[in-house]
Length: 148
Image 1 (cartoon, rainbow, N blue to C red):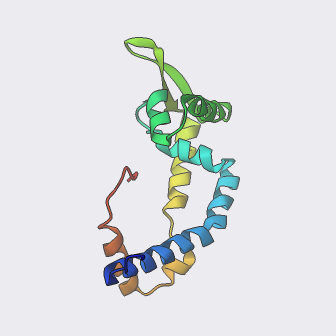
Image 2: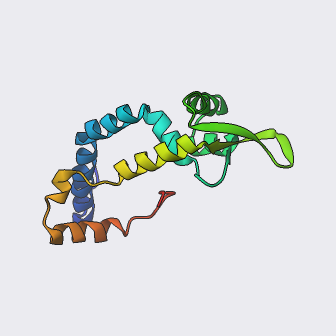
């Protein structure tokens, strides 16, 4: 027999359903930005994983992306082909390559993040009080590696 949900679990499930459905419903707007920037979803995730000031090893990228190193290589190849990133030898061990953003990559990454963090019009249409409550509640969620 299934366990009965608590009122808190039911409220959390309802809140998550609203958030998740909204994210799914607004996907076409995010895809349009990716199209404008000439990126696939995988490339955009890869691009935002790279720090504009420091390089990242291929191993750390594969770990973050939870993929085989060969898939990380393929993604970095795509970023390099577009002139967004390049590989450089690490100091101390030339066998290890760091992936760094090019100036174009830094610009596209900044445009991508700006578009991702620009609220959609229907969110802006909510009353100020609701937006403040939503922001206060969302700010209590753990960061989990979120970029700031």
